[in-house]
Image (cartoon, rainbow, N blue to C red):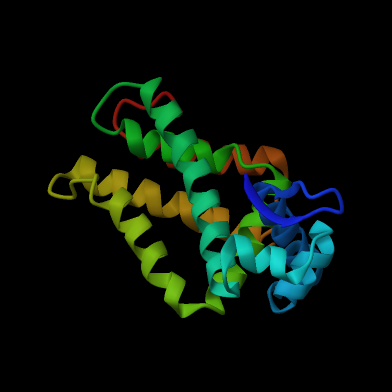
Length: 190
């Protein structure tokens, strides 16, 4: 929780960074990536532009914070799922499951975030590092490792196609695709 400005009674007013990030996501979801401005986020959050700048500095700082929060939430979900399923491919299995259980709101939010990312090449390095961290956990020196890598990439592929609404499918089709992906992993119950 950040503090900013003084109210009429001389008390510091609080600005909740998460609420500002929620407002930024709402702007991107409603208007699109081009609509992500400090002014639009301030209006959505009900604070001044200075309040947004106090929390994040610049639009790039805001975008970085949005991506970091999204990645941290996803990483936490993957870690929790991986802890529930032992084995050499637990991380990949957990990653695929996390994508599988993404709801429409999360998919829409992810698509909006990724579209915003394209407008900020500086943030691509962080995103590449995030993916590299996951991919380096997969040893492609064996047929099983290559299948695990394929499962990881297939999971991301269908997630992106679905999130950007390039491919529409029923819930049954979605689940069937993820069952097929899970079958790529050794000893996977699908």
